[in-house]
Image (cartoon, rainbow, N blue to C red; front, top):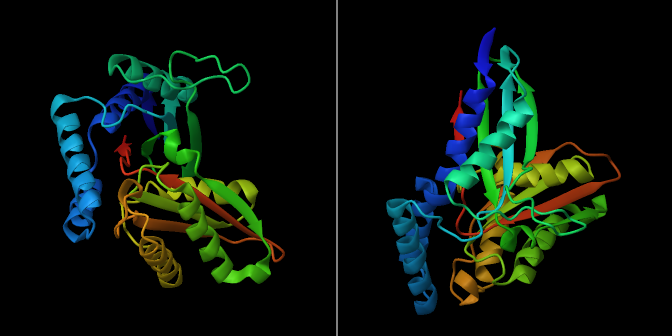
Length: 278
């Protein structure tokens, strides 16, 4: 049995919160550069140049790549042979609170009824999963709401089939227009139940950008949706071109014979995500 102190969790989450806002992962920068190189619209190519320049300045100066530093979404995978000394949930929330304070990041979390800001950017939304092993993996996804607000979920009849699923996802991205600051990453959850589909869509955003689902049939759906989205021509920031989306990530789960849940969670071009293994 391995033992971790809660203060170790807090320190790790604090670092994730600060670095995620300032340092985009290499997979994102590579995709943005690739999009710029193949772009056919002059306006869109110029916008992509500015997005890459902005990301470089943010990393060099250690300032947020976007002013909306998001609401924290945390994925915690806990090995069943790990014991945490102290309160794990409190340790995670404290890490986010101190990270947002020490990193001078915008606090955007408020009460949904009164709209009063908590002033700390907590509580974050935390998802836990228990697996075999003696490690804890923590993934941090600060979710800006220009993109989050464009997400959606539908309970399709099974008769809609995969064509109905693809139509729904493509239409959601079209309806979003420039609001989520494209080029976007489109997370799709297919199957399970109402809440499971939404979690699958969010969790898919943690995959390295553009990596296909290991199931060939699912990866083919991802590619068809991506092709249709980019052929629609909305483009970077809504200025046309061939790069409305950088990737489509789909995760699936068995569902009821009478149901076909589909969730779409859209992520902006500043696809901030970090992970650490303790």
